[in-house]
Length: 385
Image 1 (cartoon, helix red, strand yellow):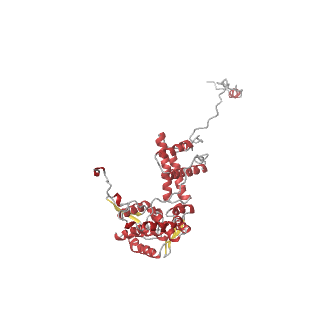
Image 2 (cartoon, one colour):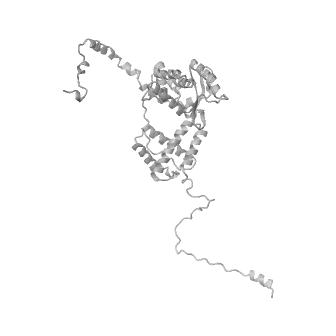
Image 3 (cartoon, helix red, strand yellow):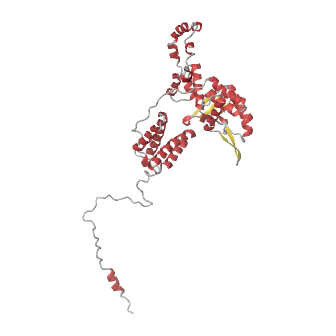
């Protein structure tokens, strides 16, 4: 066997290599831009725009709750409004809503759908405003280029007077009914609502630390995540302190400053009695229950707030005091109560009192008044001869 010559082998390796000839398959190259890499590690095109909106909605709600300090009730309302838009997109296209669906055409179709279902103007305005806040949040995080709601028509903001306002005697009847039933918790809840006009969500979040001697409630969390000091009559504060000592302390252990004032107890067959802090929905149901007991089933917790506002306005004649008690940020919100039984209009027609009295003082002496003339009118067809 003959060994290969290493010198010859080196000579062959040092020989120049002919360049490889590559054929061009295009006579005229196409005008196509180079595509991005679609590998797992690359920057995939459209990743943000095709992201499901449900994940971003949850992040937005957490941002409102944790970073903006919104109340849980307000965040739940915003989540529900955004979920209505997600359901609309899913029902319309049959697909999960994504960032691409946040365009003016889709949002306008959503508004038209709400109008076709005869939603109130205030409901449509609230839902559109919530979606606009969500889009603004996405713009700040560079998930959207612009807010599509910004250039759309907004439903008008109508200032309307409350549809039903309870009288002081009706609000007192709630407390009296709770006393008859011997429910200290219900009495305490209605006392706070009766003399402060607080919203049900704020009442549900009250804790033992909020009781400030005989002055009232300190640093109560209200709408918008703010805190307020709310006064109460001394007799009401004494009742609240006795409620904590005699009823709350024995039933809730241990009693700390962070212990909620109001608890709900219900029974389940599997686990027995269950106890949990009350929510705004529990107070709404409680108010409806007592409304039926006193003969006013249409009564709602917010009606008590309107009743307190009207009572203070009629007693003090100072709109600024009403605004401070209710915690309105703008006086325009409080001015709706001036539309109910306006005193200036009553004074404007006061000169009619004397002519009207003279005109009607002899009505009783007339042998047959205008009302008696219609007593024999048949009320049904069967009474005709």
